[in-house]
Image (cartoon, rainbow, N blue to C red; front, side, top):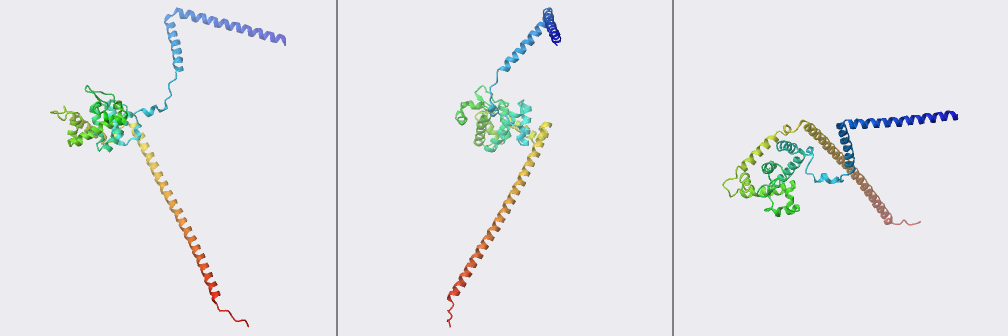
Length: 309
């Protein structure tokens, strides 16, 4: 047994020594190859540097801001109406703006249009001509943001949004710009003269074709959204149809549940009324019984006493 163990240990030692020798030989071979081929050495150095750099970058953690998406001016276009989604896709393609941010601007325009009594597509057309949907645009005279509002002139209007820097917030800029547009239209008695006022050409011989450009863009946008599905990508159409079907099913289920709840409430109410009627009838019967007993008792008390023989 001892002889076998000694033999095994000797064999293991020989293998290890041979293994170390093999590793050493490989190391020498690799060194010779590297020094013999400078290009290969350079590639190896670049690879090693890349690995070390990636590891270093991986160690630098990003800040965790789960609320970052709340600061983004973007929406899921599936949440828009057909007309709004069509407008967003058409404008997105024409002005090279991502559909999701464009969808947020379209939704804002429709909300402000209803609030101010303006055609939302007129608001979008003004934005298109004024800034081409660049929220950080600034003109030579100081007009800023999507609707190119003169910030120094309308500083008071930005007070509700935290100050004049809100001019570069797309939704705030549209709030202020649409208010100015509505005021111009009301004061000058129509859309075309209102646009002339908006561009600051009310006292000039002409507006340089500004109002015509806005109205032409509005007409093109209306044409594009007159058949909403034609303006949507095929994949979005399918997703939109599925979402619509799902919403219709949810509405139907909600209506059926409401009807069932109402029927159950009505049934419960009927049962309660019936129980109440039965209770009242029982009370009335008890009252009648007591009254009858009382009458009988009184009748017995009033009966003349019979002479005892």
